[in-house]
Image (tube, rainbow, N blue to C red):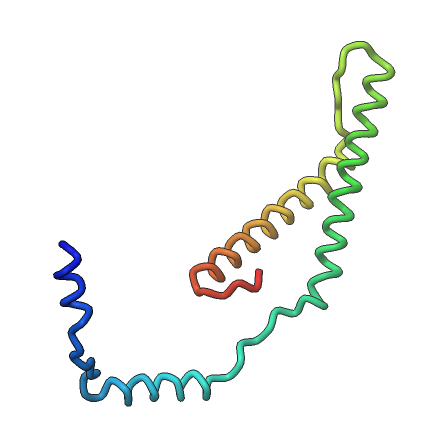
Length: 120
């Protein structure tokens, strides 16, 4: 297209008129949104202690495994780390809990992004 055609199209002063019922339907939707109850907020105050406790437990597990690995490396030349059952069992539970928490957070973020909300 050349500039003359574009100028002629843009210079056209035809008034745009919405179809019948459009304004009424838009206003009805706005009234529905105004009348809708507010969403239930996530209870962060109740969830925070569990998240902190899970993080502290995971941190404790990492420290214990590191301590065991260092002790094993200092006593032998070949590094063979055996983790006792009393450490493995709590770590398995913590890892499953961390996996579930991560999946939940990922799902929440994906849902918020798809829904248009950007709180998280």
